[in-house]
Amino acid sequence: MTLLKNKNALYINGEWVASDQLEAVLNPADESVLAEAPVGSSAHVEAALAAAYHAFHKGPWPRLHAKERQAKLSQFLDAIERRADEIVKLIVAEAGSTMMLAQFLQFGIPMKHARNTVEIMTRPAQTSLPIDLTPAPDGTTTLGATVLSREPVGVVSAITPYNFPFFLNVGKVIPAMAAGCTVILKPSPYTPFEALILGEIADEVGLPKGVLNIVTGGVDVGAALTTDKRIDLVSFTGSDVVGAAIQAQAAPTLKRILLELGGKSAMIVRPDADIRQAAMAGVGGFTTHCGQGCALLTRHLVHNSVKADYVETIRQIIGGMKVGDPSDPSVAVGPLIREVARARTEKYVDIARAEGAKLIVGGKRPVGLEKGFYYEPTFFDDVHNSHRIAQEEVFGPIGVVIGYDSDEEAIEIANESEFGLSGAIYSRDAGKAYEMALQIRTGGVAINGGAGTMSSHAPFGGIKRSGYGREYGHEGLNEFTYMKTIGFHSA
Ligand code: NAD
Image 1 (cartoon, rainbow, N blue to C red):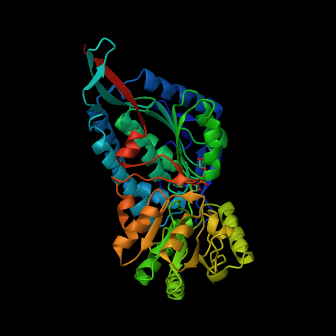
Image 2: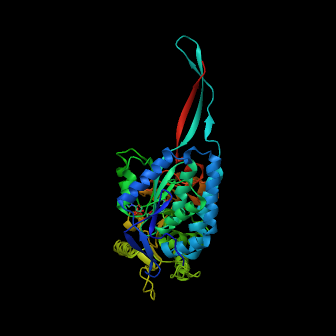
Image 3: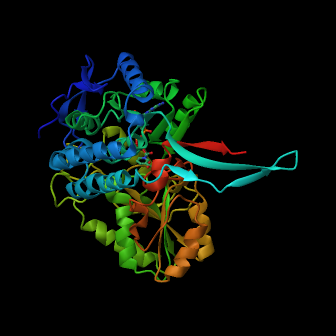
């Protein structure tokens, strides 16, 4: 496949800046070297901070009319669409995503979200409040009026993980730029090219200098982008542990932060559910992208009267799934990102067994796939919600089933989690499912596979250790603004 023209350089202030430090980026499907990627230094970070700060405080971008920014961002998205095939191939090669997932979820959905953001970005940024009469000490009244104005929050650092890199890069930079902010994007060191390609797009459409800067690198680059006083807001997606570190790192400069973190989301299967439909969703809940998804449904709470049927259906579905090279369209489950991720998955399989869980399917590396970081989809029965395998995010293809006897018990188990990102309910009684959804403490719940939580109009995000702040839709756009109250005194 063809890789970027400037694959050894970072994108700073509208220029390609070389790095003398390079790092091999592996294709997780066969462990081959995809390309050498640049690694940002402290000098690169400083240059990007200066560029983004200048572009925000002195440059044209925040001062343009929203319609002018909208036109530029529409061109930006058009330019991405023209390179769709190349980007999809890159997502497969760099993130190890299967082809169908790359086309639909990793590319199609973020582009839909981005188009929606660009469409709504010109809606009134100002709201007039009702006229107010305030009594004065002399017995007269003061006539006042107030306008609320949404202003861009400033310089944003966007820090993203490896699992849905293109999705999350676009999901952060588009609303930030739409609001009038300037951005420094730092991708995961495993997936630098899905970020750097946005630099080529920025070049092509002539984005003003310094509006979008892309600095690759690891923890030191990320840390600098969460501590420097020139950054106003950090939008972070990643693990809860790093999220907590970023909250601490950002505290001395009192930055605003958005944290989209991990999950251990519950799927409740009521006794009246269509078991095959629920089991299909359940399998997707721990095998999609080899289990490397924050909102995946990895804890299956199934009514004891239908649990045996559910477990058997899961076993049969998994038996028909092909694990292997993600560029093969017949493959359903690709590799994990790196050996360290597979080792973590294997560690959790050992933990589950030691906790007394019963292995239903999987539990080992697939035979015949010597190269690539593959692991079989793995499902455990006889799990208690207090087990580590039911509480901790594995980020590998592991699902568990826990039995329950009443709706109340199911809700209680679902809520007994330190995370609170997503959830699902399967039931033929949609009204009952809705009542239960209201009692589940997560940022979103999907009923019977409802895709509403993936709608471009719907905000996405979590509570508890899954973080705070929202992405997508109006709420996501507004996260990159602050509210200014302008009062008129007309006495
Ligand atoms: P990670 O937390 O290890 O790393 C994420 C990013 O943070 C990387 O770019 C990394 O270089 C950077 N980073 C690491 N330490 C840092 C520090 N101290 N300061 C600043 N930046 C730092 O996450 P990962 O392993 O790449 O991704 C998997 C995690 O992401 C999972 O926990 C998953 O649930 C989560 N995730 C959440 C969502 C969501 O929307 N809630 C979406 C996708 C992934």
